[in-house]
Image (cartoon, rainbow, N blue to C red; front, side):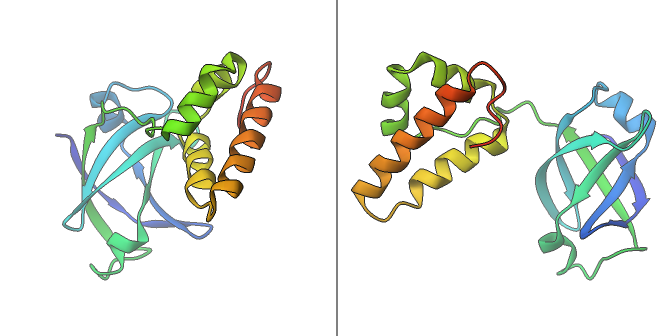
Length: 155
């Protein structure tokens, strides 16, 4: 498990660290690297993202940093493990059933980012009544089908 120590930096409202190139190489390289990060006595699932050139950035979770009294300028030890688990969220049964009859919508959702899939599921799960859920499901399927020729990133 590759480990390193880095200084926490502030990037807009986020706190992050730059991951050393040796660690990136040990994780197999790549543009976006899914990882499990262990720091401040907690483990979080994250992704190493490009930070210019060959550098990668790890965004840290404030709900982990605050209890440890860590913030910008502090040094932190981080252990990273390549995350090989699926990032796809399980789809509700009614959404799965609707996608069976709309292959274009199913293909668009399959190409969508994990965050888009999460938003689709949350929109359905937040419905208070069955009628609202049915309307949202119909609208989501239509929007996904419309987006099938291009990437389904905005719902």
